[in-house]
Image (tube, rainbow over all chains, first blue to last red; front, side):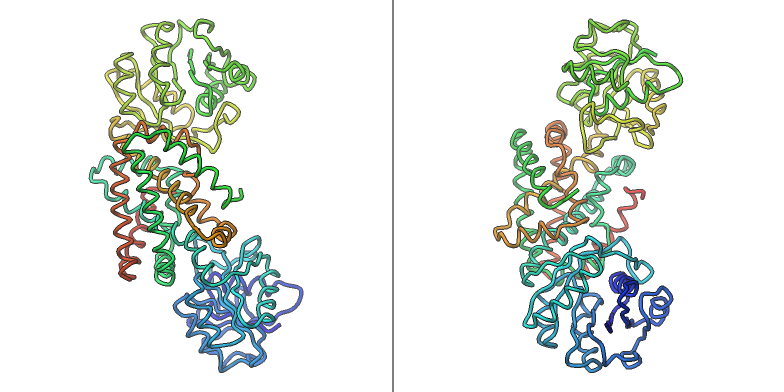
Length: 283
Length: 283
């Protein structure tokens, strides 16, 4: 197949590495705003050719599928940019972590658009962080639109790089990822920011020395990529706020138990939490 | 040395394993309420002898140091129980994760008492979970009292099993661990309990399927041992509540930014969180 990747960061670069290592020979082209990134993507073997300009890509008019792997804010403009260069039969898909604001508009721009969200990432970003097999045993959500064949084609590509594909409406996707991905970022960042409010310097320094695996894990996503966190909040504002209000209420209930010395109730709540976790976490 | 361990769980058992593997031959005795635990502790090599009764321990009157490794709620009564069996020169120390409610009362019961808190643990508990080198490169806090020599003796034992020892007042210790250990438990449990409030079953099931490393890490300590979480809240109520109020205020500030669409402010807050994390986490 002739496959395009627009945006050569961690996700786009890793997808290219996997596609180019497959036995069925794909021709993979890439687009980046940055010439150094283009050169590096070719050197690393993530793409066959890369350019800052669609017009410079050989055989772009014979493209089968284009993956838009830019930041969320650039997805719709990237779709608009690629359209003049591809044939009517080409499929466009994306990898944005929110879908309500993308899937419908994407389909209005291009009937063969399929919204997608591969749930894979590392602590790093950029083409330098791209790695083989990033999507192995990871989940990818696709949002079905009017073109079933387009969805099945995109599904087969994600499955070929090891992902498990689920289908969902854009709205259900956004509410679900707000629970398991976006809410944790705010909850976790709040922990780091609250600890900074400690007024006593001796206690603050002792806390820093004593912090170990519990604090490390609970603060990890809150101490992650700020641009990504901001995008999650901006593009999934409604679902995130709904969940934050639920979280505030839950926290208030726990605080009331602690204020009133209801130790058995606290233990019961923690037992419920312990039983809930395996529903989400398979270790 | 003649060293006693009262309470043969993860911490007591692991300490025994390390002490008995040292070149200077220690005689290590153990006490558990449970005969099966006593037998297992001897079989695993965590102690030389173990019994349910202090009176059955050979040479208990020649004990140099007793480590109380029971749950927090049983520490003071364990001190009271061991006192009739040991000489005036023996040192008693503990491993409880709160110190204000233990250190002063412990010293009133026994002038050679030294409060201690080795910050080590795993997801498991009980003598079956005991492991060698659990305290290597971990931190142990000691709360200095009236007997400097007793503290130095306890310090040398913790250092001999690989721990880094810090000294702190009981109050500073409790406020510090409330930040880095107890607050994260409540914040993290709240995440699991809030997600359970999702009323739409489709979204709830999708969230469970999509949850990955971010949710796994942020929910880990909240889905841990409920008895331990309850003890933390019960015995460190004041510090934990203070920090929960700070956390609530921090969270409200973040929510207000998201409500008002202050995306640059959210990004700045997440940048601050990102810069704060390395103060606590050395990866």
